Length: 100
Image 1 (cartoon, rainbow, N blue to C red):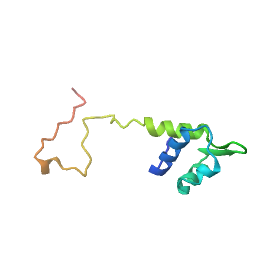
Image 2: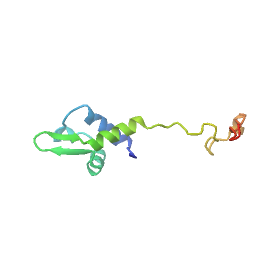
Image 3: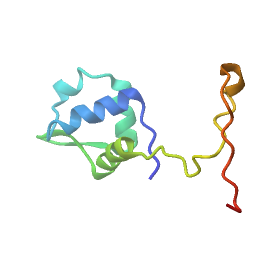
Protein backbone atom coordinates (compact mmCIF):
# COMPACT_ATOMS: atom_id res chain seq x y z
CA UNK A 1 0.00 0.00 0.00
CA UNK A 2 1.31 3.44 -0.88
CA UNK A 3 0.24 6.10 1.56
CA UNK A 4 0.95 9.76 1.34
CA UNK A 5 0.28 11.60 4.57
CA UNK A 6 0.82 15.27 5.17
CA UNK A 7 2.19 16.58 8.43
CA UNK A 8 -1.42 17.45 9.38
CA UNK A 9 -2.96 14.06 8.56
CA UNK A 10 -0.09 12.28 10.30
CA UNK A 11 -0.65 14.36 13.44
CA UNK A 12 -4.40 13.80 13.25
CA UNK A 13 -3.97 10.04 12.90
CA UNK A 14 -1.62 10.06 15.87
CA UNK A 15 -4.19 11.93 17.97
CA UNK A 16 -6.86 9.40 17.03
CA UNK A 17 -4.55 6.48 17.83
CA UNK A 18 -4.43 7.71 21.43
CA UNK A 19 -8.18 7.28 21.97
CA UNK A 20 -10.76 4.65 21.05
CA UNK A 21 -13.33 7.22 19.95
CA UNK A 22 -13.18 10.98 19.47
CA UNK A 23 -16.24 13.12 20.09
CA UNK A 24 -17.50 15.68 17.59
CA UNK A 25 -16.65 18.42 20.11
CA UNK A 26 -13.05 17.22 20.34
CA UNK A 27 -12.77 16.75 16.57
CA UNK A 28 -13.80 20.40 16.07
CA UNK A 29 -10.62 21.50 17.88
CA UNK A 30 -8.41 20.05 15.14
CA UNK A 31 -7.54 21.31 11.67
CA UNK A 32 -10.49 20.30 9.50
CA UNK A 33 -8.41 19.97 6.33
CA UNK A 34 -6.69 16.94 7.83
CA UNK A 35 -9.93 15.57 9.20
CA UNK A 36 -11.68 15.92 5.84
CA UNK A 37 -8.80 14.22 4.03
CA UNK A 38 -8.97 11.28 6.42
CA UNK A 39 -12.73 10.94 6.01
CA UNK A 40 -12.40 11.01 2.19
CA UNK A 41 -9.70 8.35 2.29
CA UNK A 42 -11.75 6.21 4.66
CA UNK A 43 -9.06 6.36 7.35
CA UNK A 44 -11.69 7.57 9.83
CA UNK A 45 -15.40 6.92 10.27
CA UNK A 46 -18.09 8.09 12.64
CA UNK A 47 -20.12 5.73 14.83
CA UNK A 48 -23.33 7.25 16.20
CA UNK A 49 -23.28 7.49 19.97
CA UNK A 50 -19.54 6.85 20.21
CA UNK A 51 -17.65 9.21 17.89
CA UNK A 52 -14.90 9.09 15.29
CA UNK A 53 -12.60 6.09 15.10
CA UNK A 54 -9.73 4.89 12.93
CA UNK A 55 -10.56 2.24 10.37
CA UNK A 56 -8.30 -0.65 9.41
CA UNK A 57 -7.26 1.44 6.39
CA UNK A 58 -6.24 4.25 8.76
CA UNK A 59 -4.24 1.88 10.93
CA UNK A 60 -2.48 0.59 7.79
CA UNK A 61 -1.69 4.16 6.70
CA UNK A 62 -0.27 4.92 10.15
CA UNK A 63 1.86 1.78 10.02
CA UNK A 64 3.07 2.43 6.46
CA UNK A 65 4.05 5.98 7.32
CA UNK A 66 6.05 4.90 10.36
CA UNK A 67 7.65 1.82 8.83
CA UNK A 68 8.57 2.98 5.33
CA UNK A 69 12.01 1.66 4.45
CA UNK A 70 14.16 4.35 2.86
CA UNK A 71 17.35 2.33 2.33
CA UNK A 72 18.66 2.14 -1.21
CA UNK A 73 18.82 -1.14 -3.06
CA UNK A 74 22.21 -0.13 -4.52
CA UNK A 75 24.30 1.84 -2.00
CA UNK A 76 27.08 2.17 -4.60
CA UNK A 77 24.94 4.26 -6.96
CA UNK A 78 25.58 7.95 -7.44
CA UNK A 79 24.19 10.48 -5.02
CA UNK A 80 21.40 12.70 -6.15
CA UNK A 81 22.22 14.90 -9.12
CA UNK A 82 21.58 17.93 -6.90
CA UNK A 83 24.74 17.20 -4.90
CA UNK A 84 28.09 17.80 -6.57
CA UNK A 85 30.88 16.13 -4.54
CA UNK A 86 33.54 18.09 -6.42
CA UNK A 87 32.29 21.34 -4.90
CA UNK A 88 33.24 19.98 -1.46
CA UNK A 89 36.49 18.36 -2.58
CA UNK A 90 35.13 14.85 -2.06
CA UNK A 91 36.28 11.78 -3.92
CA UNK A 92 33.72 10.00 -6.03
CA UNK A 93 33.30 6.48 -4.70
CA UNK A 94 33.76 4.03 -7.56
CA UNK A 95 30.75 1.91 -8.38
CA UNK A 96 30.94 -1.74 -7.55
CA UNK A 97 31.38 -3.56 -10.85
CA UNK A 98 29.13 -6.44 -11.86
CA UNK A 99 32.22 -8.59 -12.66
CA UNK A 100 33.61 -8.33 -9.11
